Image (cartoon, rainbow, N blue to C red; front, side, top):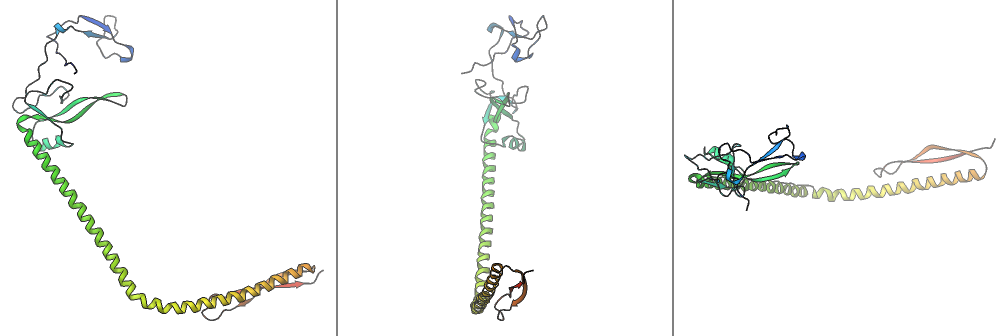
Length: 250
């Protein structure tokens, strides 16, 4: 267990002074030659540590406004209680107009420096039960509000899903007959498009054959796009038939 700090007696003289290591800087008082030193005291120059006492509902605090809690000190100030139920205890104590102090439980290294670790609050014993009950009631109300919010969100999601399903079923009932009637017409149009594509393909093959024959004969030819094959009514788009015209050699 960490030994508690013993307060110094009234204006004691240091029994020894040692220089401060270079990596600690000049945090101590300067010595005779101007270099920083650390004052050392004997046990006989200190008094036994006694915890402070809370009087009139006021929590005794240190110079930084908090209270050292175990394991930093052997015990809390007399007449006080350390409450560490969760975050928000300080704000709750301010709402209830109760005197409190943050609980200092230790120090940690953050960003290369020592920072205090604060957990919970320290209040007087006579108001500890009131603070605990108020905190539990507030957390219960928050949990109930969060549950109600999730329930409302779930109800809205289900209503949106049911509305979408209702619209889908209504559209299927309204347009089911029209889709069956349009199926026959789409089949006839597809057959017409296939027939037109077959005619256009035959004409294109004949034009390619003529071009090949012209090359073998040594002549020159030019592609002309003059003939358009019109498909049957409603069968699809028209096709352009290319005709290869051979010219005589020079």
